[in-house]
Image (cartoon, rainbow, N blue to C red; front, side, top):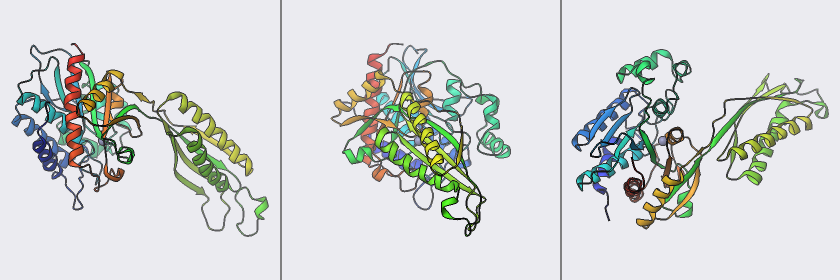
Length: 410
Ligand SMILES: [Zn+2]
């Protein structure tokens, strides 16, 4: 059975981890900073060394290509991202690019000319230094001029980064493609479900959708000493009650769905004043739109209930929804057959983190799979995936691509 070159894969991973390396073993390659540019140069050189074709689009997405003969108009794409969060780990993203690169090299070494052109891709700014999923959004045509007025960095920083990569806003907006036949991504799990279950491969069946609300409880400011406890309208009592009740309610009724209050602040905000107003940032996630809808109704009812209990008013304002992305049965089956052929255990699970795959799923049959993260640690220098799991992932990627080539026609 065809296998990837293990030493070559691990040596690539280690080489890349030296670029933007931090003292504690992590990497900082924020999108289009000089460290990221250095990582991109490294990848470009590697592609040339491997004798694969190289391409870069207007959004800075880099590709290594193994052409079919004759060249098909449509292509099967696979990959991930080489950028990282500040002081992040060395596996989140790079492993997903390098396993596909290695799979293409293995095919080339073995004289395999694919029936459909295969392309590895390194998407720009997956991690959100600039806006998040930038490269994949550009490819599917979701990027618009107005997105550049809502970036997470200032105008000067944005212009500098674009300049570093010889890109422009105009070029970014011109990167839309219509030649994608399927998409597949490998990623580290960034959680501990696979490790806990002793499972090799997690096949993602949906990337969760997310809803978020700005919530405000309103009570009445009062003297924290003289106002009798029985007569207070303490906005923080309502918020506190909600946080704990929501936790229990979601666990009891919506597992594996999750909810979070990630920010809370009280006004006026002093030792000696009963809180008159409390702001909460509420977010919840699930893989199904119907469940998200029910969660929303239940959580908003719970807000009303908690407000009433403490004689408060409550108001809420929704932020734009992020819809769940359902994965393609065809691509999931290709991953599962590859895992079976390699005698690797696998199961289906939800992805609770966002990935370029959710964007790609809007234009082509798409799926992704996870390999285990030791202790579930991620976005942290201590992020680690065992060599054996990296190698398993690369072999599954290789055979997933071969299965897709067998099952699809251009
Ligand atoms: Zn990632």
